[in-house]
Length: 191
Image (cartoon, rainbow, N blue to C red; front, side, top):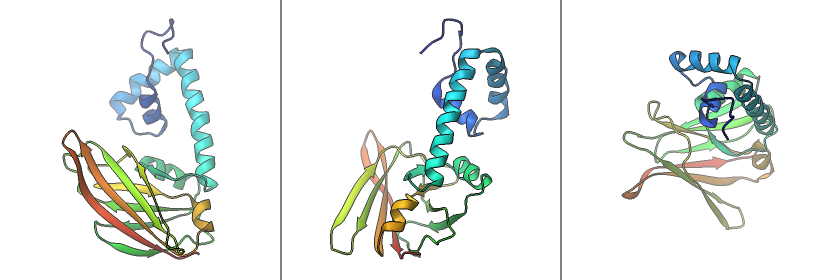
């Protein structure tokens, strides 16, 4: 989607990083200069901002399940969301809940991420009737320097569930295949 009047259109990933405050000053300054002079890219940023506002509203309403970044989590906090956090290392289990006054819950999954280029999260829930539901989130965001993956379950869905066990298995994916990084267990009790 190139504007004939814009020789250097800003790609969506860079606009997202700019909006989330993830760019270094050396990259941000010339990008802002471009935005001030380019109506096309400014319109794209405004569209992204509107989308981000909708996503934040969905997160605030508890409708979103996602793997998020630290800057996104910080932005939710700056907006006044009350967020309960649980931190686990590989193989650990935690008793957890989502309290009535909590807007969201975030799991900090500590994991060795040296030389990892892609992480998938295989999630499962053991329901009280004996059924197990499993799904996979591919290519989730992660912070190799912090050594963690941040998981945000849907608060609205979580509030409807009875006591259950939820598991997350993180796997590294590359050209050689998959290798396990860690498994995390959450024993959830309604708040």
